[in-house]
Image (tube, rainbow, N blue to C red; front, side, top):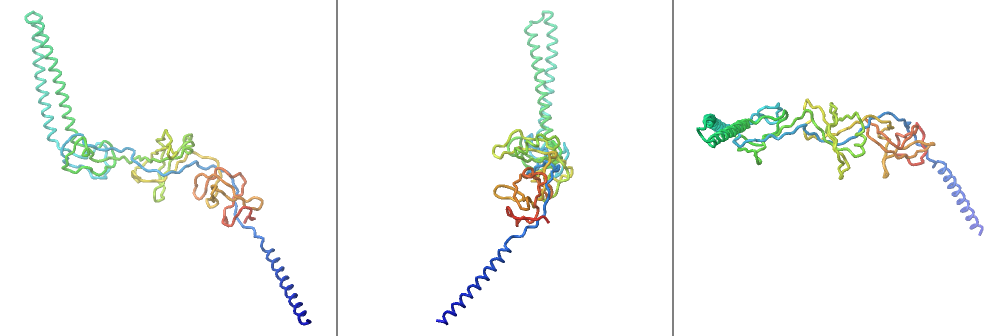
Length: 364
């Protein structure tokens, strides 16, 4: 029994010693569990003038695009330009067979001469009979018939003269010239083909004026309302490779209706393009600048997003607090904040991944 009592005492002492050590470990662990304040950099929110701008995807188009069509039927004899060349207004592009129209013109001139001769004869008869009727040598009916014949001959001359003019016009249409200056498209008909003013064979080529060039794009209804009230509007274009187009354009068209399906308004801008750097049909990024406004600007890295929208972290009473914001456009590496901040707010700009609502933070 004495031996058993000794063993029990030793066991109890060991348990007490182990429990004491565990209590000491828990106390040490609890003392070190308090998280250290997260070091952060902050930016004091201040308003400044920033440009009012909107971005959209646009597509370029020629300021004038013309289809060159045959206006008479005939064999296409010659192509007088190289596809893709820039040509001035009035430059010859195609030639249609002339011989049939030269014959038609000669016939029309012959008919005109014939009708003019008949008119002259009718005029002489009318004048001679007019004198006879005054002397009562012939009846008034004969004189009236002569006057009517003169009028009919004069009308026939007018018709013949119009046919001559039509024949001359048809002959001139055998020379197909550029109606505007611009860039030529590919030839739609081959030399030797029969072309006509109607049907698929009428289209010979296209001409596109690329200087100035137009850019068509759409902006939202809200953006349109802000652009509409601005007096100074500039349009800038960024190419697909990220290169900024050097020329600045201006709006030359704004839609009068809002697209019910997309809620956008059609817009069009005109830009100088003397070097033809922009080609019709290109997709470009469009930036519309309409004056300036007062707003806050924060680094893009300071703006985060969750299910409710974009927000920033602000330092308040030594702790991090999220603040919902309404953002505008980018300015370089910064983001315009239109709503959600007040002057003097301290916006946290780094170490965002370590932040949680209420976490202690300390400014670096």
